[in-house]
Image (cartoon, rainbow, N blue to C red; front, side, top):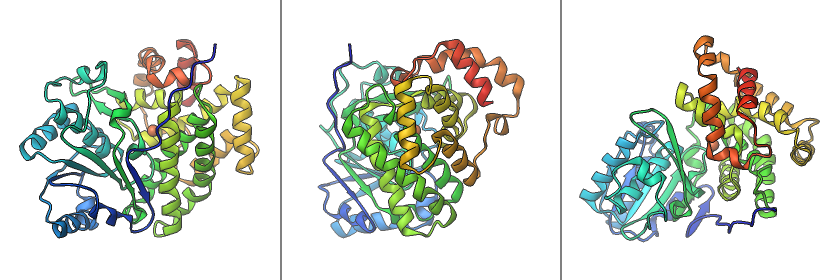
Length: 382
Ligand SMILES: [Fe+2]
C-alpha cells in the first residue's frame, strides 16, 4: 500500500527574496539578537557591517558567535548555546552557508533546551523538543545550495567519531528566510559550483523520491531548469546579478521540495563519504549523482521521470547532462581524483556500504539497494 502523504510546509513565518531584501531585517521583531557567522568572509565583504548597521539603527543590542566550521561540531553547538544563554537573544540571525545555518539551528535547540547535553539525545528525541519559547530563527544564506533557510534539517558532526548526524524535524524550520542575492556575489567560482550542484541534487532526488507529490514536483522541475540554465553563468561570471538571483531562488525552491519529500542515495553516499574523507558536500553530490541516476533507471517510474527532466532541459539523457555540467564547472568525474588512497577506499567499502544503506535518505530512493549493490556503486564511482 502506498504511504499516506505527509503534510507539507514550504517555509517558516516569512520568506523574502530578491536584490536588497536584507533590509527586511529592519522590521523583524527583536529585542536582542545573536548573529551567527562562519569564517571571516562575511566580515571582509561588508555583509556583517550591513547587518549590524540595521540593528544599530533599530537600537537592538546584539552579540556575535563566529568561527562555525565547514562541518559544525557538536562541541561548537554547545559552546554557541552557552553564549546564547549568557546573552538571552529573542532572535537568532544565522548568516552564511549551510554549515553556519545548520550550526545555528542546532544551537537554537540547545539554547531552548539546556537539558540536552548529548547529540544522541536530539537525534533520538521523541517528540522533538518544542522551540520558540526563547527565540525565533532567521536564516540569511550567502551561498546558493543547502537551502537550510527553508529546511527542517541540520547535519552536525559528532566530535568523537567524526561522523555526520542528520536530524530533521519541522520544528527546526527557520521562522524567517531572507534570500538576498547581493550576499552571494562574492562567492568564489568553486563554491558557486559545488553549492549549486548540491541544489541540483536536492531537486533531482526530490523529484524521484518515493514520497514525491505534485507540489514538490512543480518546485523541483522549476529549480532544475533554472539551475541548468543559470549555474554555468553564475560560475563563469560571479557578478551577474540575474544569475545569482536565479540560483538563490532555485536553491530555495529546491529546498522547499526536498525538505517535504526527502532525498535519495546520492545524499546517503555523500553523507558517508563526507564523514570519512571530509570533502565538500556539494562536490561529492555532483560526482555521485550521475552514477545514481544510471542505477535508479532500473526503476521504470524513475527512468520516466529522468527522461522528463532531460526533455525539460532539451537534453537526450539526464545523467549525461549532469556529467557535461560537472565538466563545465571543473568538477571531477570520479572519486579517485579527490581520494588518491585506493587501498584505504577499498578497505572501507563494506563499512561505507553499511552506513549508506542505513542513512535516512536511502528510505525514499526509488530503489532500495542491497549492501552489495551499494558496494559495487562505490567501486564504479571511484
Ligand atoms: Fe545536500
